[in-house]
Length: 357
Image (cartoon, rainbow, N blue to C red; front, top):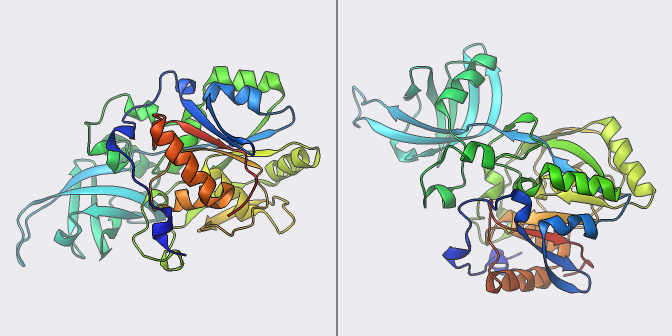
């Protein structure tokens, strides 16, 4: 499938650089079987029905953005170089330290064996480099690494925000859901950023059930696709977990007539990875690299709450698969003309589709 089918023009002023305050004051475009409706996130308590189950991703964002220095080399050229590192996948904890895959910049100034010093608590050696990515071995592991990262790292704001403004103290809280629990993500499950305790109370009073599963989000999920055909794109894998007890509760809710409402594409991808051909959700504890494009048959999810995504991204392809490509192109055109705010700190969509094209 051609990637340019998922392209669109987005005016730069539609990109949100900070979240709505309060969080649930964000707008929400309801993509329903009878058309498009302009609503707010607070309207969820009226859209959802008693017995529906809201499924969220309780992963917690770690301070995965690092700035370091590669010292001047004694031989082979190259003075001191400042290096930007974005961790995106923890590989393993070795006796000598924690190994991570990371995006690095400027990648061409790094080679195997180089040491990057981040501060007096943390450094890493480059084990290998592949284009814009590298495998780094840090000088700490386990809890000692986590403690050092908390000192040296910053919240990994998406590049389209970081390029337009300086990091702020409030970003660490803003770029985290209120229910974040399991540390491990390097990007936020952004649809969940809209929820507040007040909204959860209203949903509970409505009789809406809630379940929290875990998918550790990697930065690769949000990158634009650089190939011309979707068949040539390779997804980064991400680790997720659904316990047996959670699977039983979700299946019971659906069997009782409730709908499974995925909060975010990360939640949807984990649910679909765990579902069998009949739509039953099974326990899951593994990596997933599921890549959903139009033509995919959804098995476990009945509706989706998500944000507005990048053109040519795997996430825009996913929502086109879920609600129909023409429907979503029309929805995005309406959102742009109506002044909706896009991307991580932007407004929301609620997709309740009649499936198609």
